[in-house]
Image (cartoon, rainbow, N blue to C red; front, side):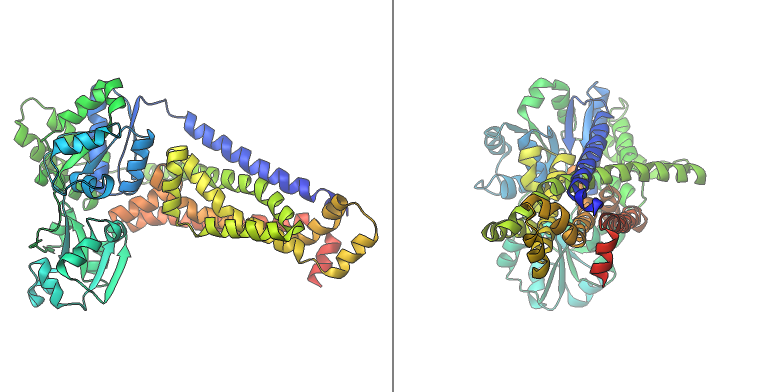
Length: 535
């Protein structure tokens, strides 16, 4: 039973190894790029990412290095990151500010009213970039013709239509809750869906009505009918920049770059840039760079700069990469994503193992403590992942740290529960035999109880690891990297190959992790005990 004596030490070393190796990967990833002077964020849709790319390019021309935290999620995440100081600016819309971020303001507040309210939070607001991106509902043209749908009020007569609305729109105060009340809509079928998948659901006839942004390129691509807001429910959604006043004072080039975009992007240019990325699959950075090149060209008039940049972006030719270079780029990208993903999983699982095992052992010794601990772990497990990430931003900022904290909480339940179950499920005769030998309690724990509970404990750790591999993909929403980056980008661009680029390695990693822990179980379980348990 020599290996039995080292079981606890082995599990402890496993936790330390996971935590230290993952921490080393996080530190290496964090140390790789040079420190940026300022940082900006973007939401998880194409337009927001392009706007942030444009600002990053303009700032670079002024000698200011900006870090762009790409596709961080919805307004709640970006707002918390801005308040927390994790980012210094991000593109937003006036309707979202009044309805979602600054409660109590009139829907059609002036810019001066918004500026005064934001200043109380240490934030500033730019002038409009020159276009408005409203929410709207859209339907297929054939259905609009057949049912004579032109206005939102026309939908009232057809409650049997299937609605597929973006998850954020479903819960916004300026979204579905108020819209259904104003127009008295009561559809029989209503489902939440990611905005990037809504168009696919509509065109595949899995849905009849979706919410859209009025600058979406797919509206023109699919010739959709955008229903008129005949009761004027939606507020204005002028595109602006929100920024931290301290950052603007510290880096005047940031504010100068933001001001340079005032009134310079019209609806046509924004829609053209969205189409270049979403339909023609151009790189968003290249589209943004081409727009900036046209914007700063002295021979262009202000009105022609925006539309000219958008048109040029749509027509520019790009050299085709060779197959060999494509394979090398894909291999390097997958290697980097794997490092980032392993860091998230390794650190969170290692920390959960170091804390969860002692808690599970203590809970097995004292039943009241066990009930309280399990209840707390269950509560943490039921918190939605996106909400957990939002909760972590004020504490840890953005990037890997809040994602690791969230994954740590999700790992505790299977580890604590299986440790508790394994120790309390030891057959009574074996417990009595151990007690009759008069062994000290810690010796009984190390030589008898933990070895007997090993299969159950390892199963809990394995479950936690597999959960972490899958859940860690959502860490990309707050700049944590990993396999979630291509998955979220693929959803946004409706690109199945990009989705698979992240989904397939994540699934493979989950299988590898499960096999590794099965092997670990065999190594840690003594041969004689293994025959006893199998028999």
